[in-house]
Image (cartoon, rainbow, N blue to C red; front, side, top):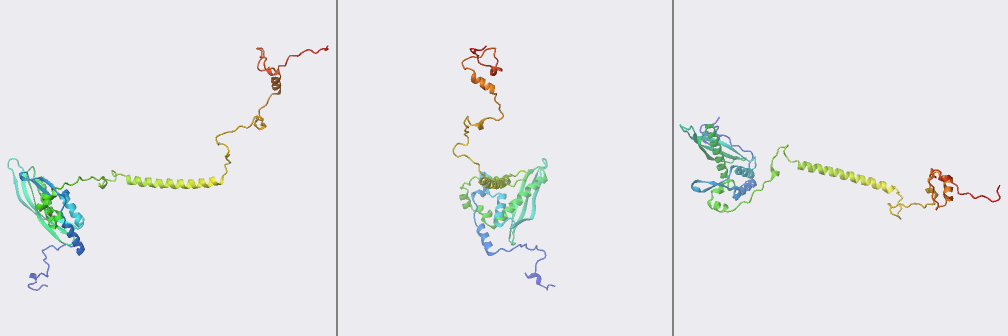
Length: 299
C-alpha cells in the first residue's frame, strides 16, 4: 500500500493517464538516419499551389503526398495517427433556405513506434450546405486531414515544415518539375484483367526448351543411323541424271512381250517403195507374199 505523500512523487504511474505505447526503441544509428532524412527539404514536385485571397497563390502539400512521405521515412508500420478530440465551434441553419453552415476543430496525434508523438489542431468548415450530414462529413474530413498534415510537419522539413520558410519557397517555386511518367506495370490489377505477358513468356520459354531438347535428341539419333548405313551413291554422275542402257543389251527386252515371226519376216521381205493397196488391210499385211515367177520346164 502506498505511503502518504507518494502520490506527489514521480515513481507512481497515474492510473488516469493512458500508458505510452512503445513497440521498439530506436538505436542511435536509426535515430541518426531518421534525422538526416527529416532535415532534407522537398523538391518542387511535392509542392502544390492554389488561388488564395487577394489573387495570391497559396502553396501546400497534398495529403496523399504527405502520407506517402511518412511511409517512406518511417515505414508503413513505423507510425500511426489518432484523433484526440473534435470540437464543434458553430452550427447555423438559415431560416428560409434551411442550409447549414458549420465549423469544427480536430486534434490529431501522430505516434512513432518508439513512442515519440506530435499532435496538432486542424480546422474544417462549410458554408450553405443542403444537409447536416453532408456538412459534418465534409467539415470533419477537412479538419482531420489538416490536423494530420500539421502534426506530421512537426517531425521535420521533409514532412512539410519546409514550406513555411519563405526564402526556400521563393526559390523552389522557380524550379520546374519534370513531367511525371505513368508506369502501367506499377498498377495493381485484378487477376482477370492483369496482363499475362510474364506467364506467356515463361510458357514460350518452356516450350522452346522442350523443342530444342527434342530436336537435339532427334539429330543425335539420325546421325547415329546415317553413320551405319551405306547408300551406295555413285559419285561420278549427278544423282538426278539417269543413263539408259544400250539398245542391243538383252537385259532391256521385256520377257513377257511376244514377237510374231511371220510378221517380222514379212516386213523384211516387203519392198519399202511399194505402197499398200486399199484392199489390203492392216490385219493380213503380215501374211502377204511376193509375186511368183513361173519356172521354165515345169509341166
